[in-house]
Length: 214
Image (cartoon, rainbow, N blue to C red; front, side, top):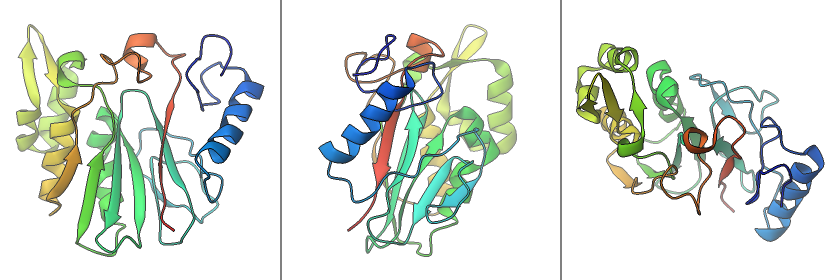
């Protein structure tokens, strides 16, 4: 367990947690889940950059692989992790998608890296619409990108509540992806299960979302 209040297995090195505790947690992760290799940790910047796990680059917000036993990973604490596999299970990846990532096109750049059009997508835990309040400037950026994204917003006074799950679904459907599961969790509300940046602040722990094939 990490120190300095980052309980429940924090795996992030950039949130003010004790470095030795995080390193210990990362070792425990490999042992506990019998991972075939160390995850490829990214420096996430809310970009549209999608990386190959076998490459040397680590700055980006999505990663995929065509190689067995290579572990792709992104960290989240309210943002949406999107797990994707082709139909044969020979190409897999995961993307980190917050509202900035949606606007910047990370979903599109991620999906376009797959060789197959037959894709399976699963949404990991993210913040729900009820707890995700944004301003007019965010709303405007979404509808400037695609007017259909207006469907993902609910007005609340002078602000809006954003359904990141629905926004991602609209973009995925635009890209021809129809097989989508998940989307029923709330990192903010389910405090005993998930870290949440909006609930706990900038020093919130981070969850690691992993995908690989054997």
